[in-house]
Image (cartoon, rainbow, N blue to C red; front, side, top):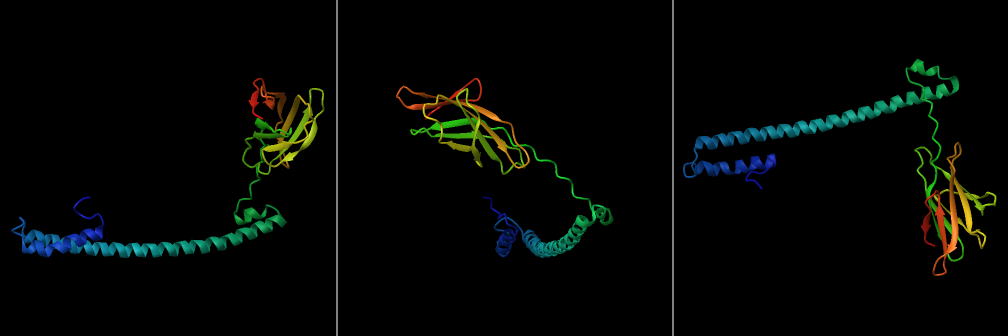
Length: 227
């Protein structure tokens, strides 16, 4: 920490409080009354400048608030007219917009389709219920996506619709006992578009301890998932 205060007001006070003592002891402390008078004069000028700055800052704050309030009033009044123009255009057509020198609303771009599910993980409990969980990167604007789940039992079975899920998980509690293999197809969908199907193969078995296992694969490299 330096000798002199950083704050302007405190620094002015620091010098002002010492000028009388410095004047009395000018020769003893190695200075002169002329130099101390210069300090006193400078402190008085600095104090006046600081007061002027504070006054100007307060005036600027008041002027800024006055401007902000005026802009709010202008914006609110203008928005009323803009909305009135838009209301008129809804009944009379877009020819109203050039008369008001206001651009017609842009036609919204079609929203992209939902993404494709990936990285299926399965958990098999002791009762044979299979818990499915996956990932899916959906583009912006595809909120409200529903995931449709289909299943085929064995290689010769037919695809059966199991249901939809509003989240990236699903519980399959109807896998027939003794099944060795099922295939799931999962598709992300919303009201106006559907994503690409994702196919996952799940094989069932028994581990060395006699417990049931489930192994899921979506390609040539299956991933072992603990039951």
